[in-house]
Amino acid sequence: MTTRDKILNEALTLFAENGYDGTSVEEIAEKVGIKAPSLYNHFKGKEDILNALIDITEARYEEFFGSDRHIGKLPKSKEEFIQTAIQRVSFTMNDPMIRKMRKFLVREQFRNERFAEITTKHQLNGIQGMYKKIIMGMTNEGLFKEYDPELLATELTAPVALWISQADRQPQYVQEITESIERHIRHFCAVYMKGEYF
Image 1 (cartoon, rainbow, N blue to C red):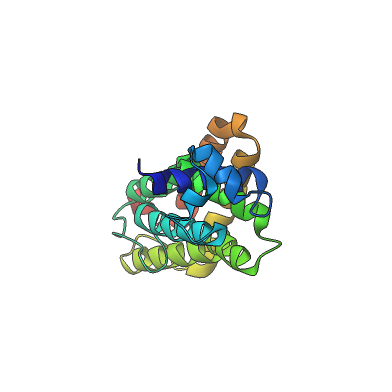
Image 2: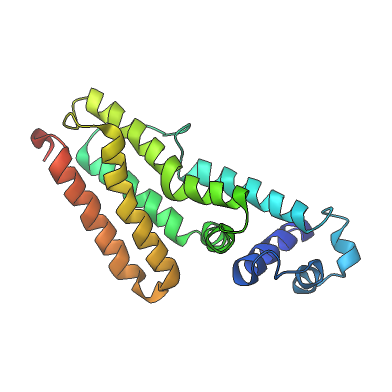
């Protein structure tokens, strides 16, 4: 791991634990094992570190989860839909970088408009937009019944976002929460997908 990567990793941990204002450049440098002036060889300052973290995290999320701009391959069956949904949830709940960034954003969303927008994107608009497109595509393929895809996307994703928030607050319940999410996804498919695929 390069010094730059160590700076980003330690900064994200500190931001998630102490907030942006509660973290100093000196603390980040100390955690990395360098002097604060050496940190400036890699970043202009704390805001530059934060912007790099947001860019990296957004790119990681786009690659491994998807977005309304990048929905990936449309599932061809109920089971494929369930498995890809569970894989996305598992990534969101278990990826250390994504978990720390989510914790940081939840803390900071009420103090910074940019953070509020990113949080809304990942907990509401972005994920709903992605699943709206997936459901529309699968409806066109005859897999889903004809319903409002935006409402279906909301019905699918809103409970999952709440459960993920609970898992962040109460990690001792991750197993039970994961099982609840899978039951929810399976129930959603049982209600809204066409019968011949069961």
